[in-house]
Structures are given as C-alpha cells and as structure tokens.
Length: 298
Image 1 (cartoon, rainbow, N blue to C red):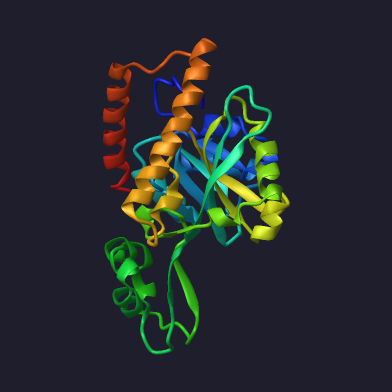
Image 2 (cartoon, rainbow, N blue to C red):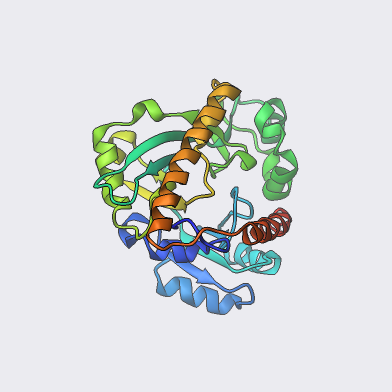
C-alpha cells in the first residue's frame, strides 16, 4: 500500500495485512477451482450461505455478488474471468467510507473525509409490483437491466405499504448507491479507533476503508463493525459525490488529497521506496481497463 507499487494489488494480500478481528472471514478461490474444493474450503473456515463473492483484483463493486445457494456459486465459477474471494456475509445494514491520512513518521493520522452510502432500495405502497416501483424511481430505473436478470420472477412481488426492499446491498455508485457526506460526524473517538486500526496495517498511510456497521455511536467506540475494503493510492475521497456538493468543492477535495499523497510519496521515496515509472503506470492503466470490461460482463 506504499506508493511505488507496479501492479494492481490483490485484495487477499491487503486483507492479510489487516488484523483478522476487523475484517470478514475471507477465502481465496482460484478461477479454475472446482465447486467441491470451494465448498470444502469455505466450510473449513466456517463460512455458510449466504456469502459474498468478489474479484481478488477488482474495482467499483463490479462482479460483487451475494451467493445464496450452491447453484449461485456454480454459476459464479462458470462466469468469473479471474481469481476471486468468498467472504462471510456481514449482517450490518449501514456502510461508510472513511478516508485516513498519516504522514510517515507521524505519531497519529487524521480522518479527512467520511461518506455514508445509501443502498439502492424502493418503498412499497401495497399496490405496485417490485418492477413498477423500480421503474418509478430514477436511480433504480437506471439499474433495471441488471435487476431484471438478477431478480427474475421476484419482480412481480407486491411490497406492503411502507415496506423497504434493498435491491443492491453494495455501496457503489455503479450499483446505484447514493453517497452522503458524513464528514461532519467525525469525532475524537472515531479518529482514535481508526488510528489504532491503521497503525496495525503495515505501510498504510493514505486511503479509504469501506466499513459495514451497526450504528455510528458503536462504530466510533470501535464496536459492531467490519472493514470490507481497504483502498490505497487509487482511492477517492468519495464524500465529494454527495449531490449537495459543487464541482468546485470536488476539485478542491481531490487536489487536497493528492497533495497529501504527494507528500507521503516524497517521504517514502527518501526512505528508499521507488516511484512508479510512466511506462509502468500506463501498463497498469491498460490492464485495469481490460479487467474492468471483463468484470462488467459477470
């Protein structure tokens, strides 16, 4: 996670650097693995259905899927173009992205942004089918093609008046989530909690942790949460995508965070860590584009 890496990082390698108590139980699966071997592996780690499958190298929640049955696992194995991970299903219904920055040599870091992620959902009226509710909602309507494929006959279900149905339980713009700036909710307890976590992650100075949690109060106290993703130098301060913010606000936040990253990179370079070359950066970008196109097909 230090600047100067030459390739997109394996999520499994990142998880191995995080104390186990802060993350979901995670198992690495080779793309050519058999269903039998995967079932044996996840069972030995205590993972049951439902569980979550995600690419080992991925982005924007592409190809992240909830697997409810063995049939879902078999289908995922058929479609995946790359190695992937299976994680235990985390029951918490709320998600935030917490951006953390610490300069090498500093005793403590700081939280520079918090984004709350509102999962794509619809509210029933006791009359409309799930399909009709999706079509009425501007955000869910944009996901209709994917939702038709995933929900199938469930689209004919009529939700009770006031019943909330989460359509996509992933906090990603590409999957319909709405981002809300929660930076104002930062507090000394939360900063202490995440400094203590980040101090245990070797080489982590800059990036965003995506966290599922029970309540913001317990999260601040370091209780009832699970870190589902850690994103390094390529991560964005996603609180800028709150609809209330202007383009100018977004530019200022990005420039400010790039300034942090630049200073961290210079300090690490003086300690012997090489900069990424233009050639290596360009090659990684091309590799990223190819992978993204493959993952979109799942």
